[in-house]
Image (cartoon, rainbow, N blue to C red; front, side, top):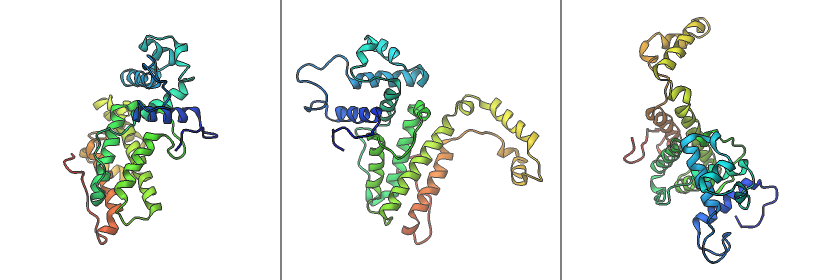
Length: 266
């Protein structure tokens, strides 16, 4: 991944790589800074201010003008670094997804536990920055921090018996599962609705589900123990993660997969 321009790469992706390089090597020549005192306004400060706004008020509150105001600068001053809100959001999303700088390297000798720990860290990142889930994504990962999480997972998998192709599949499977479960957990209609939303949901189902068409649902929901909540908890997340990791571990367990947990985790 050099610094040269990549033909056909969207500007936002280019900026995400520049921001990541600047963050990783703030004092190296060629990172976009001229020798001498740092400029008051830099891409990293712009992105950090935008993330702060999104964390506090949501993604819709972010605009170049609002970020400029937060930094005490004119909106035109931001154009030296970033030209549109769309590009800013791409960089924000990647910066917010950065792995912790003190994150210990995965242990390939305990790759199942390492994958579990990585999945929980990504899940917690979504919960700290829920607006990230509102940013549309398409195609394979292309931004530096998104790829860095994949790098950590591949390093964890490096001593497994999975083929290289299946290791990539495992990364896609885990990444997609974590994102979807975080989306469900953070759905405001569920997270903020409480008992009223639960009662409304099961009340609605009671008017449309019939035993002849939905016999299994009707049998389950006849027991009030199964209609207490529609929330998604840490236990729900762990249940699915266990099933995924047990399946990946099956070749290592002589056909007898077992649930796994990250050390010291929930």
